[in-house]
Image 1 (tube, rainbow, N blue to C red):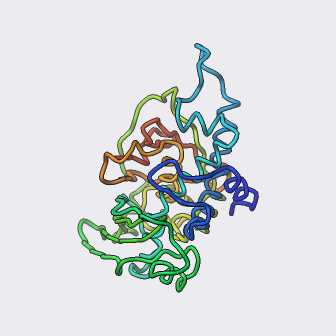
Image 2: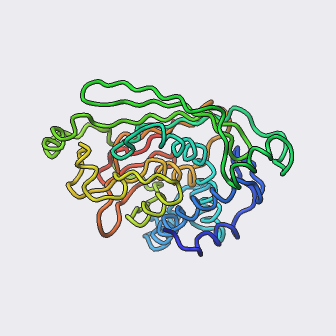
Length: 318
């Protein structure tokens, strides 16, 4: 888990959100966002250290693009602001995914394929301890968002896969959100695992590193911290070999990163472009393998997409 210092840095470094989330510092959901932000902060710190230590362009310009990525690298409180922005941006999806744990069993072995978030209605006034909204929150405890009905879950089985699509409505960060997750698991995991080593790569690639890309790295400690903060303890992310046993084309002792962790990093450094798009859509074309020791490299492009060290797309934002 991230240390207490990370959470303190986030709390000192931020006021109000700069995107569509308008959260007051004492909002009941703010503690949950702070915990997620604390898990993001060590990853962002490493990115800044690498950026500051790396060679500068021959033309003498800044090594990273302007905007949020530049601010996170250069400004004194930029990392804390970015961590909080990413945590708040992904929180509705985190809450909805957590609520699915009881509706989908077994949870271990599920692969995240995509996630879409839509803000249905923003709050018109702050939550208060009294009134209907305050009473509902008080009965659930501080920081526990309530949902409008149970999540809808549909399951289709075909071609050796179980495809699971869900729709959830959650009240969080002072707004009402519709969140759709698409999950999958291999039904023929044993057979596929035996052939995975020789399988041809099927995910798209982007050739050539861009000068404006930001280099990120993920460690298993980062995955443990995110699992603790998000409540997603899927064995794929924590137990060596679980991903290969589930039929994924990864190393025999690999673990893979949480899709929402990568999405949060993208939202932290490449904020939403406004309210033009009805949905925030995150697609996860390929898993990110994280080694037992050391870190897994990632490259974040200015459009928010993310590639692994083989230039395979692992996150695509629409």
